[in-house]
Image (cartoon, rainbow, N blue to C red):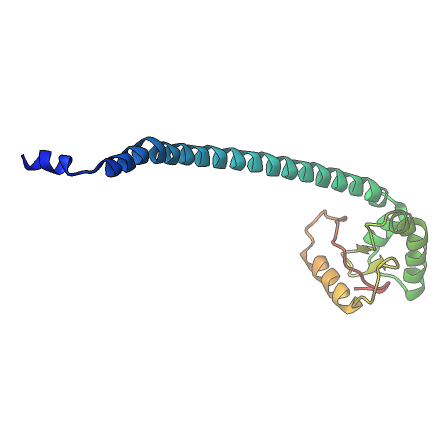
Length: 176
C-alpha cells in the first residue's frame, strides 16, 4: 500500500510536469543530439572534401610549375659553354671572366629576365668554380654565404652528376 499511496500523493501539476518532460523535453533532447551528430559529420565530410580538392589543385599547380621550370632551364644542360665550364679543370682569370660574361649575357639573361619567379642562377662546377647572376634579386644579398653553400654542393656531388637545381639563393661571379 505504501507504493500506491506514494503514487496517489503526486499532484496533478507534478504529473503534468512529468508528462511534459517525457513527451516534450526527452524527444527534443534526442532529436537535438541526432541533429548535432549528423550535422557535425556532414560538416567534417565537406571540410575534408574541400581541403582534399585544395591539396590536389596545389599539387597539380606545383607539378606544372616544376615542369615549366625544367623547360626553362633545359637549354643549360647541353649548352657548349656550360659543358666547357663544367669539364675544364682550371681557368685563367681572363678565361673565367670571358666565359662568365658570355654565359650571363647569352644564357642567364633569357631565364632571369624572362621569368619574375627566378631571381638568379648559379652554375657550380666540380672544379670549385661558379658562375652566378642574381641581378634580379631585390635587396642586399650576403654573397659569402652563397659561395659557402655552393662549395658544400661541390663537395657532395656524386660521380656523373653535372647539373642540379638549387634554391633561391645568390652569389657573385667568383670561383668557389
